[in-house]
Length: 491
Ligand SMILES: *[C@@H]1O[C@H](CO)[C@@H](O)[C@H](O)[C@H]1NC(C)=O
Ligand SMILES: *[C@@H]1O[C@H](CO)[C@@H](O)[C@H](O)[C@H]1NC(C)=O
Ligand SMILES: *[C@@H]1O[C@H](CO)[C@@H](O)[C@H](O)[C@H]1NC(C)=O
Image 1 (cartoon, protein in one colour):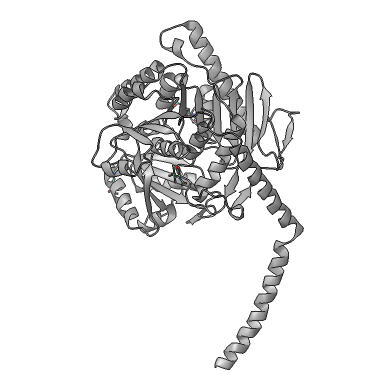
Image 2: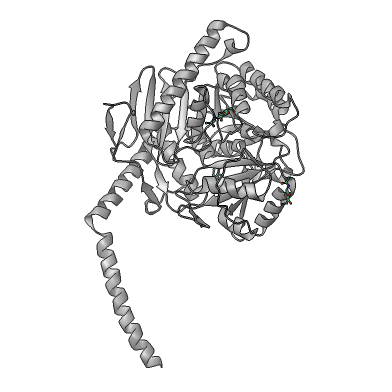
């Protein structure tokens, strides 16, 4: 028995060594070596660009970030759905909010297959609790500090800022925050939980296969929609004297069952807060997944006119643009858009918002007279980072900031501060067109100078390729980490 086993093992063994040799040859093929070299060069060049500027201030810059926060329960999405016995639907369908299992199945399928980021409010408390219970003892689950504001605050504290964070948290939540973060808000006993259903590229659920790694978020908040920390935050703001004010987390108000007039009052209070801050202080608003048309209209009225800077992803950009052009909300857009498409959309958003701001100040009505021009627009996508920054505005170091945003995308998704080139891939093309207009210039991607910047009209555009992480640890919170990292070098 043993002898026979050895012989067949030896035969098998030599087959394996042959295979190893062949594989080695294949890996050393000139094409692959060239790809590896290219990636290494892009990485070292991006790192050089990031290091080119430090934070110039002698003191730590001060950033005030609102609103809210939650505890994220991160699970493998398909495992959770299988565990609770949710069958894949035959009919992917978009829902503004969720009420039962069937709607979750339809909504998840709708975004899972294209691999588009989505976030939905769950109106049914019973079902939400069942999902959370199911996720609690799912192997491989993780808890972490979540919500746009705490993630952005955390990233900025890590990058060397002092942060005032507006949010109402439980004591153990506050305990795990960086020592450079001061919380403004009251104490709550039961923090809001967000269920993060992550999935890798190529995951399958029934007959659906995901085209890229992403996440579907389910929330059913009690505290966050009311911006419950706003008064405490406002009270501490004057003394704190921030260099930058950042607002995010407003999507928790989307499709929330407010009493009539309640949301309006909250956003109007927020508008007062933003417009009463000193005009020299930059205001950044981080967009998110909004599907309720009326709240988008409210944002255009109460929030966006007071923002100097906007951050958003490839889904949120077409959504905002569509609304600005008087069309409907877009629920699902191409998750892998081309550079030219994104830049054209960015130019249009920039142009329309600045046009509105100009008209607003000419009208001189009390509300919009205070509206600020948009001087910075940052769009984060899977394959690249793009920024538009007005020339001569307060925002510095756009090239380095774009490089840092790009590196942060890999660091976040891979879950490691050191970038491992064997876990990265360049998916941006060798060259890109600056616009979809015919005859537009093409810009080659130069490995030694991967961030391309050029001037147009009154602004500068910078585009940097992302070293897309192939060994995904987490996608949720990526936009917040990326946006915050980009802002830090521009204060
Ligand atoms: C809420 O969820 C529970 C538990 O899954 C379900 O039995 C109930 O039908 C749902 N309610 C509505 C209004 O869909
Ligand atoms: C996002 O940034 C925060 C703050 O720096 C950090 O704690 C967190 O780990 C980052 N997320 C990931 C997945 O890397
Ligand atoms: C756009 O919105 C209007 C009003 O809500 C609706 O009647 C119409 O069907 C929508 N159009 C599309 C293409 O979704």
